[in-house]
Length: 492
Image (cartoon, rainbow, N blue to C red; front, side, top):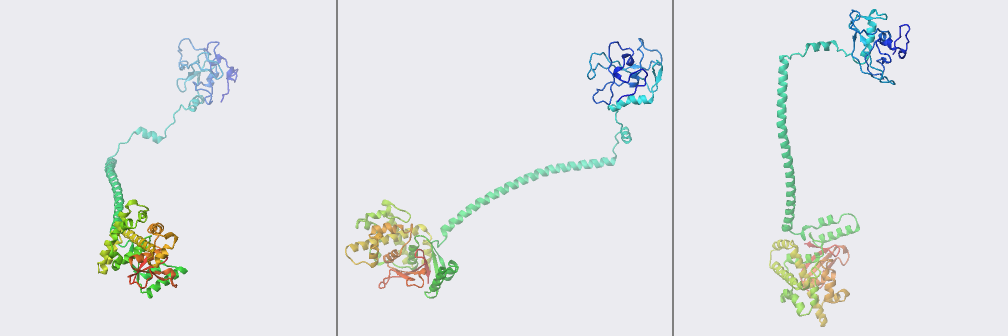
């Protein structure tokens, strides 16, 4: 922003001014820095010079301090170091200190050396660059200045009491919270630890209780292999639901047993490959049947040694006890223990006259799987002994029952060894008793085994007897089967 030049004979371009026009006492050959507008963003902040005064010629500074009153108001300002303008050189000499009036309204020298009053317009023009540069501090509002002059107010007595009560209350609450926080943290930690302990204890006790329940069930539960009596028709309705032809046939067969043969209940037998031997032996013991006649004449405990030494049956060492395929030389000792157990138990049950007592003892005996399997292996050995005796009689041209002739006529049982290897060793392991085996079992124990074959209902094979020897007065036991593989015990 420029200013118009009103001095005659002077150029309006500041770059064409002469040194004596700006300062009368400047040394020749030096070029003074010209003032820039304070509003220019590129110009540095330099000491301001009144543009009006700068354009007018000033008198040369006197060699001695002025004595007149008109010249005494001019005071030299602190000189500023040399500063090169943009695009200029820095070796133009020191910048002369501009002159400024001493006070408002004082006279300043004019163009002809006459003192001149500094007007208000020029004074404002001089103060404008300073205000634009931010040198003038903003004034505060009147209320703020009055409050600053008054200073801080002294608090009253009521406010002191409220502040003290608030402070005491906050301190008390802070202390109480610290104490309560510690207690609550401790209580929560204790509760979590207690819950974890109770949970682990509950899990441990649950496992131990489950183990003890299973142990007690295995130890004291009865009728694991032969269950208690259930109603025949209820069992039929539960086992054979639906309207399929086989289900209808089975329900009619059970109704025939209930109404015609007066069978009211049934005992379910454990389904495995020993169920036929289990059903027969349970009824022998529960009814208290006596020993067969041939068992009374000889000691059955010595039968294993008799087969080996008297008849030369050394192949007996290949006898297997159910899942046990081969035991070698221990066969005779194990067979002797099994046969001895059978003799002891049979003698004990046959000597008990009370039916209920025999029933309770049967429940105890048939709850022990180890004893059961020994008894079943003894029955298998007795069947093998009878087959061996019949084979020896057949070789000497003696009369033998027809069932043994039928047995030896098969390729898989042409002699006792093949019968043992192909049929008897599999009983209890992979298969049960076949029909021919049921004949041999009944003949060996001198009992009639009547079997109701339910799947043969309305046919001549619905009711069969093993063996079918009407002239023999042997005791009779009854079984029922649905497929000739698994047997149950009917109760009349």
